[in-house]
Length: 346
Image (cartoon, rainbow, N blue to C red; front, side, top):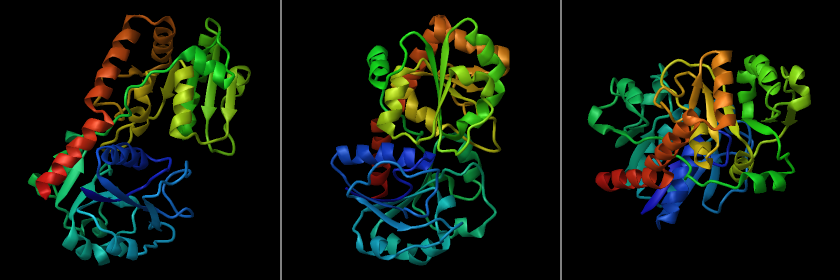
């Protein structure tokens, strides 16, 4: 099957995570993939990472900046299905002018990443053959404007469960073998500043090392933890992220609830490493139960850390549930669910 997809790719965004996890599985299964993506100078996310594969065409920008779209790749390339990932960051009106030409040669599918209905008319000018969302929360508001029989729930994909060797990973990365290592990726460090008192307290019993990776020019709020905190101003590629996850004891996700339907693409990317996630109890994880350790207070946060460090029953139950979740929603299975949808439409 020939698949065209308009999406973020090799970027630090949830859309890119989704697209890459399913897209690479489509290729493994023998399908042809062509990805139309953002310009190097105008993209959604904090950074471009990695080296583009030969099936990537960078031919448009965000509506907030250049609002540019080169129509030629969309018109010249051959594909049986055309997937649009996240209308919110795409030059919608420019795409709208050529969409009828795309529909003439391919079935069209929207993957809806939005957390609620938008009041911008430009979102609703496209007659998609199908709309894909991640769970019932998204479908609940999407069916207000799209025919319900066009809406399909296909869960967000997970990176496959591939565990690593903690001792070997630490040796390779030059990290201490005798410390409890906590990692935080991206801009999520802003959401865990309130846990500093708890981390100070826990460090009195356990010798910890907090690793923060961020592209931010200045990471502040951890001055009291300066002796046990290492801040690296870089954006890690997926392979490198997994090396640090193998070396770590735990990853912290401290985001507060946001309006509407949301989930953590980061969790879906990293859970397959086997590194336990401690997450603030928010709507990012309302569709998960035991798969992550949730906290609502600093005391609850400390209890989660102790559970991981002591590898108690709660920790073991979390690992078991996480593995089952990853296997149930593996990128291979989710990619196959999309292929089944494509075949139905064709």
